[in-house]
Image 1 (cartoon, rainbow, N blue to C red):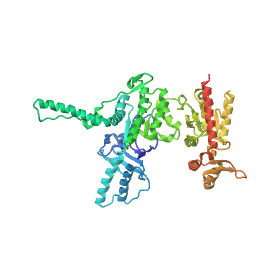
Image 2: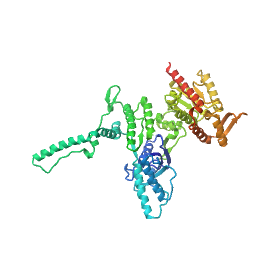
Image 3: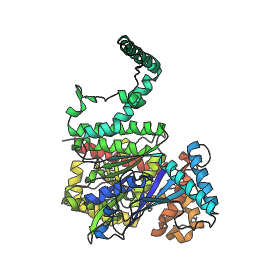
Image 4: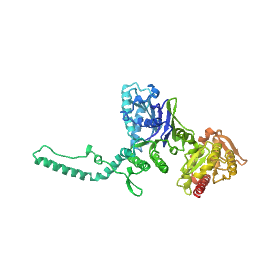
Length: 561
């Protein structure tokens, strides 16, 4: 069972917003409003408060601008396995189906919502059907209340929330998050010896009892057990050491090393949680805290791995920690005295929220990786990432430079050209940065202008070195087999604003209607994933090799004095 999304409305200072957070993948919260970012994290934690309000939610805190009429409303969307393969999930769905039956409804999907609001006294009120009239039969009403309350308890118990505040020290976080799981691991190792330990404790107790008896006290008998009845309580703690190469306790290392080491432990804690049948959700404030720049890439890698196996939401002040995929970013800004949550149309817009908050000029920081591929728009970046994923592990598809590169879009051919005119001369001296242009008229026009601009400055702009074209006459969608594009056009001609063929019905060029691009791409990628990789991927492989080679050329130029 996993939490795939959370809709947040009116959370504390987050006013008059109805924002959906897509948690089926890593999520990052940016912006200058610290309380807004923190409260948005807290809203996720609040959802798992349970009927007993274990995190101490207070209605008094949930009143933007002092308006007591504004109340928190949270809607979690869950997804699990209702086929019976996962017994724990199946039990959840069986209880859910009983609720559906009592409401005379039928469940049609494995995805389902759970609603949370708070009463005037601050009591959490959960519901699966908040707007559905309950049946008139009192017996059915009682059954609904009983099943729903138990279902909420069982569902929330499948998850474990880990809130990592930036205000706590690494030592405190280490004790709160890691030590309990280390104790459990040691207990597993000691368990085969547990009977011998108990025998030793019994021997000690027998001697104490004997001493009492020899003193004339016959009615007292000693016994020993672990504090609270658990062997874990006998373990007080652990020292954490790191070697570089000298073995030193972690708290004597620099803050950057401490932070990176702590992030690495979260992967193991996640595995332990999953072995216990729980789905961890990590809420991390400002993971860049205490990191020096040299560890930023490593920290990003650790967080990426963590998000592969657990839900992850971070807040950040650092542009380096803002994902390239703008769908994975929301921002908190102040408007009319309220913190509101906003989405972004591009990575540039997302980082701009941080730059404005920190007072950093655009030219000071571009949030590029060690290697960067600039593309015209979101479609290009999406398809490049998709192809790198489907080609992973295929023979001849290593492309280490490309796979390690950031892919950033600039909003169109002319926008990319304008960005390069303003910044490329400096950027190319610092790190490998290349551009991908469509081979259509707009891309060719942009490249011709750049070639003249940089050529006149004595700084050539050369194909397959500073930039790469997709395919002559085509946008990036033209890398798929022509017959596939012809078939999509035959089925959906209204998806194309231009479609050119010669007398032999050979494809010469095409342009997709902006609002239909996603539909066309979904059809092409779905077909690609259903047929043999070698049958359709040649153009894509050639493009990837050209991008990888250009990145290597740029890296060589920078490393050569």
